[in-house]
Length: 333
Length: 200
Image (tube, rainbow over all chains, first blue to last red; front, side, top):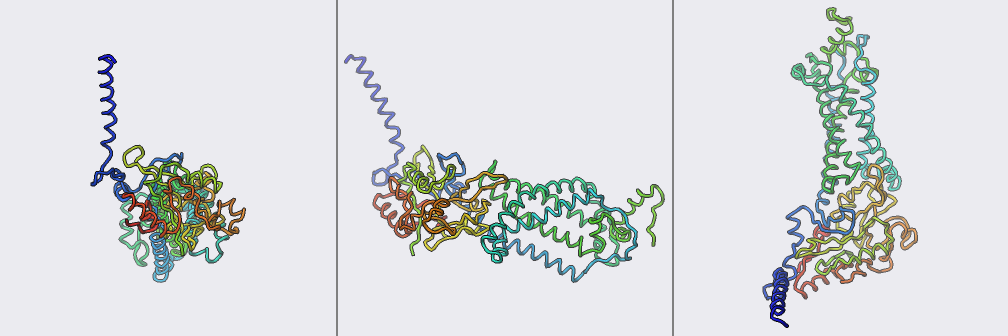
């Protein structure tokens, strides 16, 4: 071996030894000097404190499989089986109870001066169609949706497992498809009635006069009173929330991961229950609660005395439209 | 009464996927369904550990609690079975499962998933088919448990890292192992699944 080859051999050997020595430093030794294999391991408890779930690497194309453990699943289960069940029962039963009390105490609000026998158009055909499209879709969605949460408690004991599964399967499809007619109706209603629902000063006066519930006071209102305006805005917000979360549930894991799906379900359920309570009150006042109200949405026409009592500003404007610039015609008395 | 559980010793798992292959073959699991999978934590770094995960057959199984048609239920041995005839494919069991066990065979309209499929502890299905029958096999896979055998994944494990069997027995095996070799990263998933851990 020449001197040059000797030096080259020496340098390469030293380089290889240095390279080999580096990984040795990664090896952790225990207190007794022996290698400690678990020294570098992050145990489950630490991992779960760092992040809400444990994830790793997998060979499967389905990325959801890379989640080894997501304890949030048990939390979501607690929400759905305990919180939602009790919350929904309290809210819906409570609403029905309050409405029952309202009927017993206040009763049906009659038209103070009785029917005049003369009618005026309040809702055009297209407006009524939009309302009923949304309303019937809502009732169908509400019932099929409540079946997911309460069906196994209320319906399953009555019809047995096999029939209930068939019903639940059909209800799931009905719920999924009816959601589209609901969204269409919601868009129509929002656009059609938008401009008549802006809050105005007259709404404060309406509230101060007791909102038409106190017999001797007259509560002024435009086309829609404060109560109706609140129903409109709450319905719009709730409708958007329930539609957006529902859309995510309709297309699971298209852009969402497990926590987002759990959140979408929570939002969908909570908003839906509150929405049901709101609409129960809306249905009450539009049917039982007030004489002369239902025909507005059924036929489109309302009695003049009813209009004068509950929507006087709107009536004045409508009569002016009908009769041009004549002094405001007073209804026949 | 025996309480059947799974325990994956992450310090022995070499990510060979024999358990995955055994399960797929024994139960004729269709493409795309992964009843059992191996997840590797800190891959390539010091402290890399692999865990074989399928249904843990939890105590107070959240999937069973949340199912809208109550098609999932625990047996006397603690095995969580489900009835595919009742399943409506709503997907709630997957949201509730801490371990991602439920699998769905279809990608249909508006989240239609088909009937949920998952590890059955090789104990057949929770439906009305006769135990060990061909109909049961077609729907749920093999029923080794009815023949007194343990799940094939654990039987085929090349390093005996995946243990299946009665809770006391496998906990004891794991404890002895940890004491003998002097280290152990714990029984992965036991606290969440069974609400108890193995103290060594």
